[in-house]
Length: 359
Image (cartoon, rainbow, N blue to C red; front, side, top):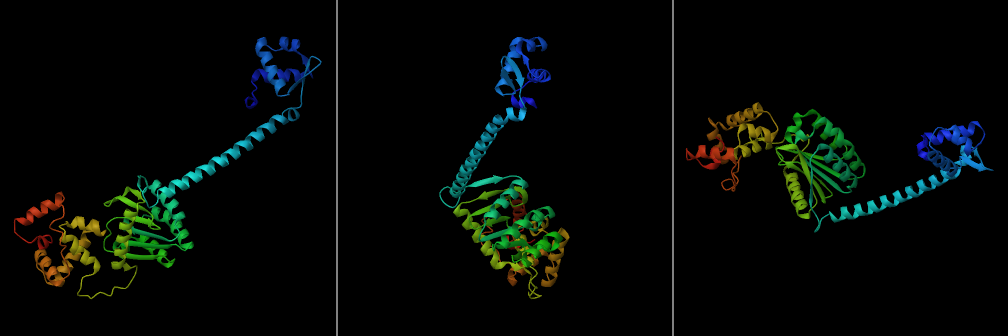
């Protein structure tokens, strides 16, 4: 502890030696303390420097520590105050540079992107961006992004934005109705003033803050793979346009189903569209966020309502009834491995790509 004063064990021993005799001469000290003379003199000099010893007529007299060290404590306090003030100035300079950096990262020539790999990084960035948002925050989320832990982390952010008058929009997959925690959160958000809707599928998850900054999933097939923060005006314009287009076709949360019983629901139309792209039943399950049995039950129900005896016939009838409208780019889009194999199999029967994709 005495080392903070620059005193070692020898200096402490010298002070106690002088204290026990109410003062002593240097000669007595040199004979009474077992240490080399040079080290004794050095320790005495340090005690004199700290005023813990005073030289009175050749005698080393110990001083009362609070009085002796008062000037040292005052100097240390002054130094601490000076360093605190220096720290305040450094932090102010850092904040100024940070603001300039953030401004430079906004829409414009210096816009860019940043990779965020972990859930902790993503949540920390969401906290930062949500705190700065003043007008609008829009989410496009698959239902499997709504784990209990994720919801607990998001709720205070959404609550704080809603309390500040920020418009909060959420679009989920319709399969959210199969997720108790996610559905409860979506209903809480809607009841708290947020706007919540559903779609049969969502292409990717992203969050856009004030139309100036977005967090976008790195891998559409794996929401946990990380995210990218983007700030470019071009990126944001595309994301906002996509969200606005999806808003036009979304269904408000818990809205009553007013579709004709003879017409396919939005989920069933999306099922037909995905099958029309050549996706397997398993791939369709992943896109819709439902189980394999559910998908096959939906297919069987559609076939029964159309009176189709096979998937081939169901595909042809769906096109004829207008339930499925083939995309004109389907024949030209790049094919991945599984899709290419499926296309090769159907070509053996010389079927049209649109109908054959439903087989």
